Length: 212
Image 1: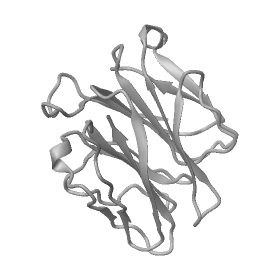
Image 2: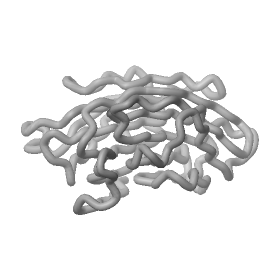
Image 3: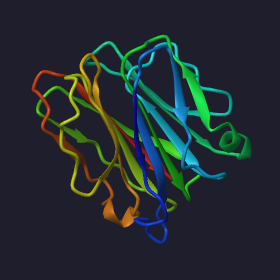
Image 4: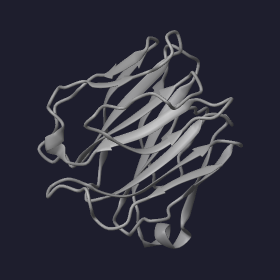
């Protein structure tokens, strides 16, 4: 099942920030997940996030930004990225193959940055998740957070300085959100990003990614 968020135009981007193009989310129903690239243009950076992966190998030309094994639960999350070329735009989609059929997938597409770098990983099993902060590089264009909750709901609250781009929550699957800050000046170096409203005892994890 697909959930699509599409923003047109260039609103919301700072002079030196990223421009958000589009985002989509999926509840994985099989081991083959087709990710739609609708809204993308040649040269855009696509960031694909998965909450549950097993023996996942990214498609040719895609970079594995991070593969993170939860210590609080027997699953692994992953983030992939790629600067899209003309062939990607013509194809209109990309397929990821994963041995696990559950979990969620999200994609966000940005204009401006060309590189995604994993900065921090954080876990919790309380009612809040405070993602460890980091120091931005001089070329920072955006901060992206990929947060997943094992309580199968996506009703948790994101930080006030972030924008939610894609979310997914459904029975039998995790709750997940992909959020960002596309004006780098809205993120203070080293500051934690606090997500709240979880159910205590249900593991959560958050990955922070810097786009440059």
